[in-house]
Structure formats: structure tokens, C-alpha cells
Amino acid sequence: MAITAERRVGADSGKAMVRVERRRGRLGRREAIDGILMAMPWMVGFVLFTAGPMLVGLYTGFTKWDIISRPVWIGLDNYVRMFSGADKLFYRSLGVTLRYTLMSAPLHLVLGLALASLLNMKIPGTNFFRSVYYLPAILPVVASSVLWSWVFNPEFGLLNYGLSLLGIKGPGWLSDPKWALPAIVLMNLQYIGPGMIILLAGLQRVPQELYEAAQLDGANRWMLLRHITLPQMSSVIFFVIITSINSSFQTFTQAFLMTNGGPNYATHFYMLHLYNEAWRSYRMGYASGLAWVLFVIIVGFMIVHFRLSRLWVYTDSE
Amino acid sequence: MSVGRLTQSRRFQDSVAKAVALLLLSLFCIPFVFPLIWLVSTALKTPAQVYVSPPIWIPNPVRLRNFAEAWNAAPFGRFLVNSLITTFIPMMGDVFVSAMVAYSFARVRWPGRDKIFSLCLATMILPGIVTFIPTFILFSKLKWVNTFLPLVVPAFSGSAFYIFMLRQFMLTLPEGLEEAAKIDGASTFQAFARIILPLMSPALATVAIFSFMSRWNDFFGPMIYLHRPHLKTLMLGLATFESMLTGVGGGFGLVSSRLHLLMAITLLVDLPCILVFLLFQKYFVRDVILSGFKL
Image (cartoon, rainbow over all chains, first blue to last red; front, side, top):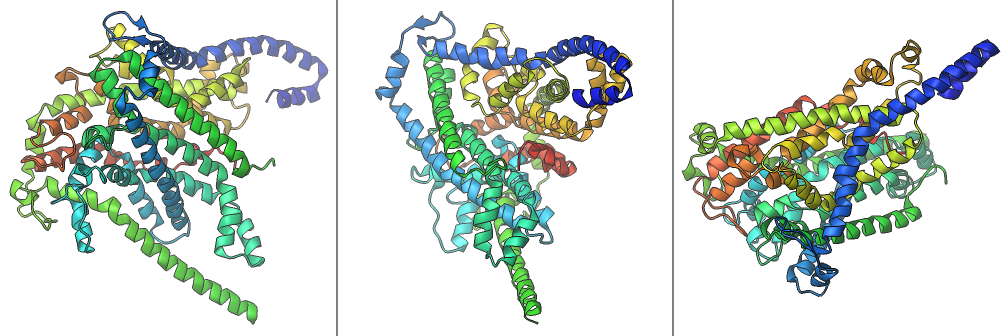
């Protein structure tokens, strides 16, 4: 912006340019101050609501604190309690959350991509289908949890009725320790919409010429997908994976409302464990430790994902 | 000749593929549509029609009274007001403060700007879990528990995701739009408010809608900060309406004599979201969200 403005002026006359330059210096400083002031709300918010709390949480993770009395420094005791298995629910809830993420995230990506591809075929009614798939994602999780508790009802629920029409006797879902977690995976498939829309927009941006050229060379559908669509889509896929890992790891409301972690801790998600420690048992220090552990795990996943992505994410510059 | 045949067979292949796709898309609608139909249907039933197998799809008689009865079973009017407060006030911050910050990142030059913006981007993928507890401690020390402040005040620092979206949009506006105004002595803020902001309405609308959805639907925030009954939002009201019911609580299949009322109130709580979605559908699929990707 600056360069073009100066060039334009420079073409007019040298003297005017000097004047403008001087003015620019003054205006530039003023602009810088204005700019910093306008970005200030975010910077203050970052310190007060993000960076500050993160550091405070790191500190309270080494304390015993019921929020009313003063925090007491106990060194690594909280982390020892976690990793030694003294808190039996720590590994349990971590396991539940990992299993959930491994079931849910790939399903969301594959189904999202499949639906996006179907929607991209320019079939009549595409807009209608797109809305139908998106709609459940905008409904409140609380409302959906209530509704799906009813859908999962073993005797009178919609799901087992549907299965019975196919000749299958459905399980007890939320009341069956084996099926409660898959039930939540199933329910959360209704949140496929936003990822699907992003993938669809990605698909629509793949240059059509690439397909045409490849088809002239005799490429079949599979080859088009493998060698054109996926490489062109890799950065979008990368983003969708990041967001779905992030949200899977922090799943809370559905388990809190539908099963309260049960039956037999089958849906005792990590966030639920953290919530119980912090807001039911008032062990703020221990819960802060839990939060930091999950934070490190999620960031670890993201770093691995970033590293791996160098092998498969395609960028124009390469 | 052979080329003609080739295109003909390709065309045939294409229409078969489209028919299959249409079939798949329709089949996949079932799990998305039927639970909602089931919700509407249950909300209109008499208690006797609820626990019936096979299920009754079209209730007879239709019991519209369920809605009023459910609404009056708890102070839902109060909850609605609380939901409106905790949705629309923070929304102002989400929209306008984010826009102002985005403007600074997009179109104002200042030292260190791009580094700060990268930091802002990084917070977007930062798992929120790590800040919940310390922020709660902060607000409880400030005696803000049982007020709306913890849900309202942070919104006025802008939100990374909206800042990012709005910045991307601002970068697409032509360069030098504000120059003339600035030469005439307008301040940076005036240039933003008078020249850029009016051009932003589609992007601002997108942010407003996203903000509405996330604030209206929020459960965790209200749950940890609002404990007094008269402060509850609709989501809290709905969640506690459920636990008031008999036979509910941990590993259940939802058995209750008031299930028809529960479904009626669930439908009422869903309704504003459905309306917003239907009215502003195009904003949900706007490219703005995507403009950040290098493709």
C-alpha cells in the first residue's frame, strides 16, 4: 500500500514527494499508536483470559486448593496421584476419551468427505440436502442430548424401532456399558455439517482443468480422487482434523447430561472427570493439573499431526 | 465416431452416478431428519401415546397444550430473559470489538503487528480446557459468580476466530479505501467506523449469527457461573427440567411420566436456532470462513 502510494506521488513531482514523506512519518507514528490502541482489547483479553489463566493454572497444578482457603504448595503430588494410578478414574477417563476420539474423528472426516463429494456432483436438490445435514449441528447440545436420550431408549426409542424394522434387536445403548460410548459417537455424527461444508467449499475450489486434463489422459474416478482431489484438498483436510481432535478431546455436555459418565464409567470422559474434581469436589489444584495434562496431550497430538502433514499436505510453493 | 460413442457412454455413466448419489444422499437424510420428526411428534402427544411400541408417528389427538404446560412447569419466561441477556450483550462485543481488532491487524501498520496476529491465530486452536479453572477462580475472587459478568465481559476483548474471519474479509477490500479520508484528517478509528465498517455488513452478519448460536447454545459457562434459580438460562432450565423428572440420572433410557412436556420444551428451545438457520442459511456457508486457506 505504502509503496504504490509513494510511487504514484513520485511520478507527479519530487517536491511533493518530500512533503508527503514528511507527512507520512508523522501520520505513520499516529497510525501506529491508533493501531495498537484498536488491537488493545484483544491484547488485554489475551493476558487476562488466556495467558494469565494458563500460567495461574500451571501454578495451581502444584498446589492443594479448595478455592476458599489459601493454596498450599504440594510439589508434584497432584501429578503423582494421576500417573501412579492412585486416582483410578484418571487412566479410565483418558482411555474413554482416546477411544472416543479414535472412533469419532476418522468417521467425521470420511463421512464428511463422502457427503461433500456427493453434494459436489451438481445434483438437483443439493441445497436442500446441504441444509438437512447442517441443521442438527446448530441445535443446542442440551436439547439434542435430551432428544437423543429418548431416541436411545431401548424399548420405546426411535433407534431400536428402526433397527427392529431391519430385523435387528438393538442393544440397551446408554444403559449398556459396551454400547454407551458408541452411542455417543453415533449421536455426535449429527455434528458432521460444519466440517462437511468446509470440505465442500474445498472441493469446489479444486480447478476443473485438472480433472479434465487427467480424464483426457484416461484417468478413472479413483485416480482422480487419489491424485487430484486429495492432494488439492490436503490443507482443508488438515484443518478439519485439527478441529475435530480438539472438540473430541473436550467432549463434555452429552456425557454429563445423558449418562453422567456411566454406566460403570463407560462414558466417563476426561472433561467430566475434570469437572467433578473442580466443581463437585472443589479440588482446584488437582483439576488444574488435569487440565494441563490434557492440554499437553492435545498439543502433542497437534504437533505430531503438523509433522506428519509435511509428508502429505500439498502447498503450491513446493 | 468413436469419440461420439465415448462421450455418449460417459454421459450415461454420469447420469447413473448422479442417480446413485441422489439415492445415497436421501438415505443418509434418515438419521438427520427422523429424530427431529420424532421430537415434534412426541411433543404433541398425550402421555398415553408416548410409551407405545411400535411408535405412533402422527399423534391423535394432537395435544398443543403441552407447550403451555411445559413452559409453566418452571419459570421459563425468566430463563428466556436471561438467555437473551447472555446472548445479545456478548454478541455486541463479538461483532464490533472483533471487527475493530481485525481492522487493526488487517489495515493499520504498527510494529509487531504480525507477530501479535500470529499469537491471536494460535489461540484459535488452543484447547480452552486449560483456562476454565483459573478463569473461574479469577471471577469468583472478583465476586462475579452468580452475575452475568463472566459471560459478558470477556466477549468485549474480541474473539480470535471472529477476528480472523473479519480480517480475511477486510483484506479483500481494495487498498487505499481509507487514504482519502485520512488525508482529510480522519483518525484511524474514524476511517474504520465510517468507511470500512459499512462495507462489512455480510461479514458482520456472519459473525453475529455464529455468535448468536454459540452464546445461545452455551451450557458450560452458565452452568459454572449461574447457580441461583432466577439467573438460569434456557439451557440450564432445560437441563434441570430433565433431572427433576423421575427415573433419570446416570445410564438411563429416559423414562418419565412427563416426557411429552420435556420434548415440548426441547422443541421450544430448538425453535429460535431453527428459525435463525432458515432465515440466514446463506451465511452459514459463506466463503468468508474459508478465505484463510491457501488452496
